[in-house]
Image 1 (spheres, rainbow, N blue to C red):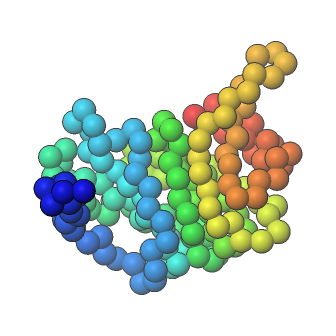
Image 2: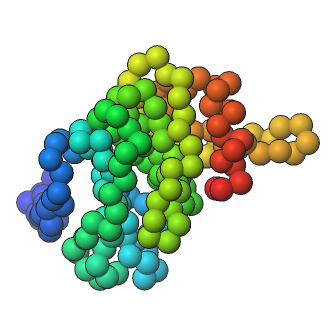
Amino acid sequence: MTLLEEESLKLTEVQRLEGYTDRVWGLAWNPATGANGVRAILASCSGNKTVRIWQQRSPSSTSFDCNAVLEDRHTRTIRSCSWSPSGKQLATASFDATTTIWEQNGTDFECVSTLEGHENEVKSCFMECIWEVLPGNEFYTLFLNEKTDLPSCLGHVRELTDRM
């Protein structure tokens, strides 16, 4: 690698997102934002059992403001967060053995489901669509995490499919 290539790869801090009282464990960019004049949105999660939603001040800005704090759903550290491909839902995984699905409605977020049944901490979640055509041409979306209990997950997913 040449010196010119190394210089082009140099990272520069543009803003420190502050407000947490504990370690930040995860960060997720909303895939439906940040292009075509839509301000970027990201979520961060922490040991203080909260998720913060950050929005870019303007499409050309490098500054972000905290627009929402999601709290009172998890009882332990939130270790991971992940947006749905549509950017309409956010999954959060916690050491309290639950995964919570939040839905954005304007600037507000509502808990639409809590996936329970894990025996231990949920350390990671990754919200990606897996489409499977079932008899009758029904579609189901599965939310994958480190230890998915598929039968109970399907029960929760059937409630959420229409929201995606």
